[in-house]
Amino acid sequence: MMTAVMVTGAGTGIGRASAVRLAREGHAVLLVGRRREPLVETLSLLDGEGHQVMALDVADRQAMHGALAEALGEPGSGPLHLAGVLANAGIGGANAYDVKGETDRWEEILRVNVTGVYVTLQECRPYLVAAPREVTHAVVTSSVLGRFGVPGQSAYVTSKTAVLGLVRSLAVEWGGEGILVNAICPGWVETDMARESIQRMAEAQGITYEECHAQQCALLPTGKMSSPEEMAEAVAWLMSSSQTGMTGQAVDVNNGSWMG
Image 1: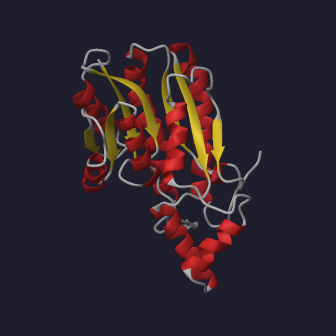
Image 2: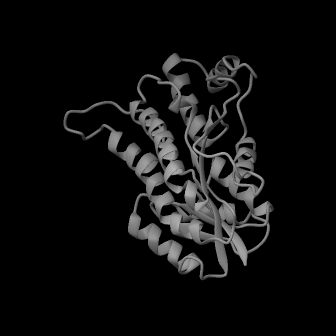
Image 3: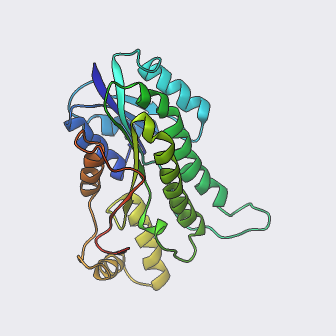
């Protein structure tokens, strides 16, 4: 029986790099995201076989339930067993309170970044329990902004802090079932989302993208941002068969931008 892992937000950035890394480990990868085209691009990069594309909204319970049933069958019965899930799908950007609620992105961001993670993990749970392994793994992508606040991004900061609470709660609930639940807290990573943020910061300061990028790197003890591949290495270790004792933790891979 072949092992499978699910990666949400698999079309770009950390999700894509993690899918490539986990496929290299011999897993069949279930590629999840809102848009099919980027998922197909990721699929073309994967070693091995058994990979599947699942284009859906991660906060849609029925869609997630149906897609898992189609991909894996009833828990414990199909040719694939789910060894792990990376709940990585998320959106960023600013939000601002609007009394009419017409322009404030609060609900949009919380729906994807918190409800989407909750639904993903809960729908994967029966499959993780049924897998014939000592432990299975759930990993959530939080953020360094789950560690401290920044102005103008109250929804994003709240969402990334909230999923750390979810990780701790589910680690306690699911520990007896052999499911280890952990998070990664990236700092700046060279992704589309980060590039968009830096571009907005550059425009606000009246400087070039390159100047703003260098400015942000200069604030980091290492003087650099992470690559998606670096984050994928952390994910791969958290999901590895040798990782049998860490749960309820948040791993800070942030080039020293927060040292708690």
